[in-house]
Amino acid sequence: MLYPAAPEAATRFLKFVNASPTPFHAVHNAALRLEKVGFQKIREKDEWEKDIQPGGKNQAALVAFTLPHTWKQGAGLSIVATHVDSPNLKVRPISKRTKQGYLQVGVETYGGGIWHSWLDRDLSIAGRVVIAERNGGFQSKLVKIDKPILRIPTLAIHLDRNVNDSFKFNQETEFVPILGLVEGYLNARKSDADSDDKSSGPSTPPKVASSIQENHHSALLQLIAGELSVAPEEIHDFELSLYDTQPSVLGGINNEFIFSPRLDNLVSSFCATEALAESVTADYFPTLDGNVNCIALFNHEEIGSVSTSGAESSLIPSLLNRLSPTPATLAQSIARSFLISSDMGHAIHPNYTSKYEDKHRPVMNGGIAIKTNAKQRYATDAISSFIVKQLVERKGGQVQEFEVRNDMPCGSTVGPMLSKIGIRTIDVGAPMLSMHSIRETAGSHDVQHAIDLFHSFFEGFAALDKGLTVD
Image 1: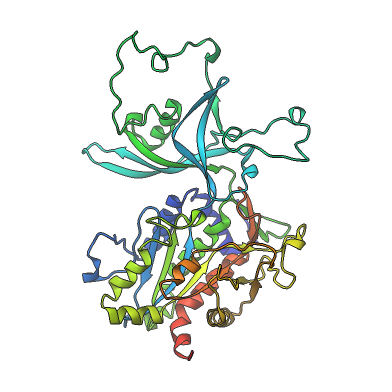
Image 2: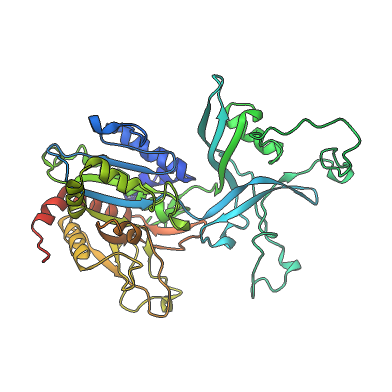
């Protein structure tokens, strides 16, 4: 779809989010973007300190960095931290369900989704699959089925007359996707494998521990195998999520909106990646002095960040230690570092204005919102807020302020947990509507606003910090 009058950065974002239905795809696509401008993959298990190169990722999270030409141990890190996961439905390890002639797929809810928004949507699956290779090894490959194969239908209003007054559903029993119909189901007899009588019929060979063939519908495994050009028996495990096949689009009378899944938080992840990729070809890059510019795209923020690829993992502490390995240089590096935790925020909703604090009502396309919370659910303080305002001002932008009401709980981000390292931290985000719905809404101009902030951060933080005294 062409948008001749739309913000160019927003149209590029559409391609990214449409190609990134899972965190694995988002990390992959971010890595491809960085590799195009010269970044090289480095792995945590490798001894890359001997010949330090910018880059680094695994399949579920990504940390990428550039080194200034005058880099030395003890230099700080200028980090933009985001997350690539969103609330979704994950296929269970044993997903095979059959009921009343329907093939169904068992799923588990992930994160705090607005789950009713997943009803009556055209859904498919994507994720990573462990397959056997011809050389005897195994490989984890990405898969994305580009057609609707699943649906969670609502009950007709004729069978639930109070649905518009008090709609509730059971997430275990009334939230099971339909995959298809069982041919001849009503006339079929139970197979020997399903029978309680184990004395009759041919003996069943023992199940191989690594085989998942009995755990999922054969039709589903065949579809996945066909997409990967392998046999179903060569699939040994997977992590699959459901996603909405309706593409992301620009909308509104003047294309001022983005209508899309996973805006929280792929907008921030895309903007961080773009800013770092563009920084290496910017005029200022050869003259950069001081900090290592870095982005960190974490997984599992929506469920607490406690994982090997989450913000509470060793990814950032490990990078700090490997770049500055002595106690003295590590302490210097932490003191010189700064982290922008970028996660989408709440725009004022015209139909629910009472849910917002009277003086803290960010609008879409009005610039980046600084998030503050006295209870430190956000890590922002006066110093970090001042620094970001200065950086935004240098690009001619505007900032907005967000705080929750005293009678409402506050969400959180990766910022507070990363600030425990000792790094100065701020929480910011682009305002949006319908956060955690399967279809969210954000401002199309805010994509460039975020990129501009991160550009200014990578270009000018180190110099700005030298002129700031905090006694």
